Image (cartoon, rainbow, N blue to C red):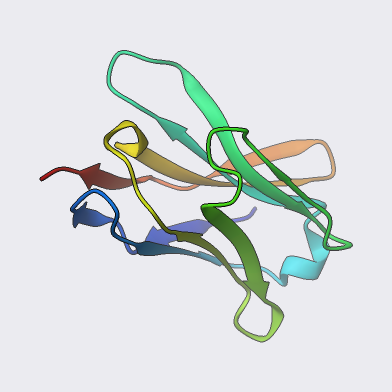
Length: 115
């Protein structure tokens, strides 16, 4: 069983920055993939960014150049640095992990971009 706990959400003005954290209950080396999804009101859940165990990354086109996914292996934590935030980035952000055919999800953290 893998538990994921997100933190770092909040309200920020357009153009601002936030950093989300996702702490895993296991050694993240054991996870094939970790990533971030988001779900805006009235919309489906979409991939934001993900990182493979070897460090390869994938980003949604809408966040390329603005968001960066990274990890701290010693802390078993994955981060999502979000810069130049826009109104359309408003959503609940979920941390996710994949291991041995199973997907795990955090409880989500709200990000609101509003002036």
